[in-house]
Length: 215
Ligand code: ATP
Image 1: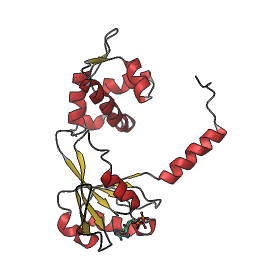
Image 2 (image 1 turned 60 degrees about the vertical axis):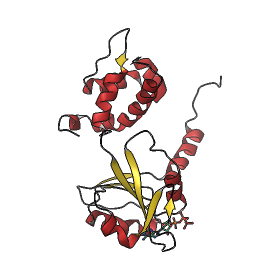
Image 3 (image 1 turned 30 degrees about the vertical axis):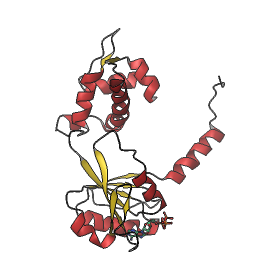
Image 4 (image 1 turned 45 degrees about the horizontal axis):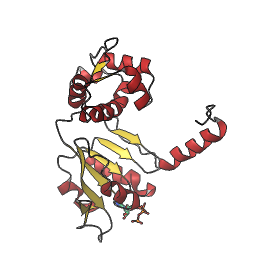
């Protein structure tokens, strides 16, 4: 990201991939404009927030016209580095890791899991979903050029693997283990705990039921 783009507030930046995916779909359907109301309904973000977010991108919607899809896509592509391919390593090819390798959730953009690593020697040397799997001891020789890693190892292994990854130059970690890992300040960790998310959904359903009648 350029200096100028890095001034976008973090909350706005987090919504970028969401906007990007929706606008990409619109573009593929041949639509060249979109209203903030349409966008708001599709991405479930209120339209005032969308208008504020888009003003950071220099996209000022016109009344009765909305936003120009191509302009926005051009902006998002350069901001999200869609022109460059980002390689991602997946550490821990167990049930969850294997599912990620087989599921092409990254189809629409230029981020790709290109290497998997596992401590199990039987998994090393195999290929899952077209991604080669290496033994974890090969991290040093195989990780060159990769700055992002997905962590799907057992929680007990998370801390020590993280330390190794950081020493190998990884800068961003998407942590799917329940472990809270500690990293130096220059390393960014995003944490996704599926069990916690599910528990929280069930809790909200129970204690904060949505007061909207079924259609
Ligand atoms: P499986 O049934 O294949 O073991 P799982 O998801 O139930 O899958 P976990 O115990 O969560 O198993 O381990 C996930 C994966 O992480 C396994 O494939 C395991 O071999 C691998 N693993 C465990 N320790 C390490 C480590 N230190 N470095 C890399 N991979 C590891």
